[in-house]
Image (cartoon, rainbow, N blue to C red; front, side):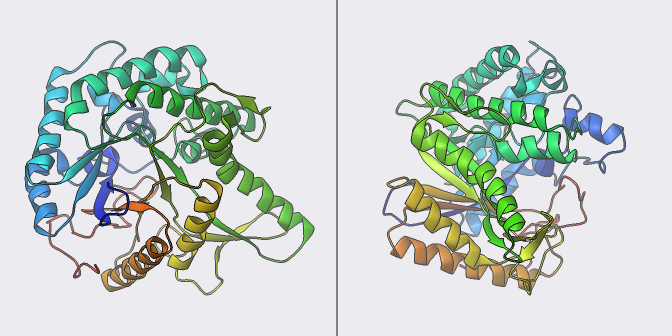
Length: 391
């Protein structure tokens, strides 16, 4: 990840996608309740990681972001699974041995059930004690094998899904609980930054940002757009630029060490949205083709987001993380990724410091909300390349 150097292209996968839900995770409980399809063993990474690392190297990838599953490392409060520690070290070593830079994500979708039961990120004492200890342990156990840290994957999006939409554990639709959880995740990324920074692997802030448009030109539609924009963009920009936690539903609060709390800003841009008078979202532009998750695949929107991010957060390096296409139509996926590569190349020519592009994902796996019905992989589960890579 050298500024001005060659773009590093890699892949990313959640622990759910790659290994399935840990038995002690809140997502496993979600599955047992019948709220989600069974994830099983994911795409088999847990036993096939060495071969998968070789496959990445064979096809010219330079990085892979894997999620360290907290619920496997610490299945109950204070009980560490030493075998899992060694397994993760072997996975990191396998990637490094073939020249793949390992990124380590510390939280992506699923939490230890015991941590969630104690209040999770929304509870100051629980977060301050247990999250901080987990981050410290990961730094101690895996820091010498990691090329970059990504402490939290889409933290605001996770809080939205879990506490506003109710489509992830604990399945609530409670604006007040959402605001507290979102506030807590911002503090969690600040805490992880404090603990992991300092001359070693860069610490990456991840955010899902969208290119937003007013659908019908009405004042209510514009109001809805501004509210969503403040949630997605305002929370990130106010934190990194001004050191202020700004979450709708809570008073803004200045937080020590929050300003500048990232070495790299990673963006996921799943698509663009149009917002109408009733606050309904539809893919933008109207004629855009959508994938199996309902997101319209319009690479031009990524260019808009990159330029806006560079204006609001100048002189910062960026990564594009987790953009992909959930479809059975592999040629269409290739075409979207080819156009995305062109957008990134144009941004780099214009001086935007995009250093890494991690595609979702290497191998078809389990997708929250969709099970195995919406494949994102460049390779199928038998590790066959679906279409020639478009870069």
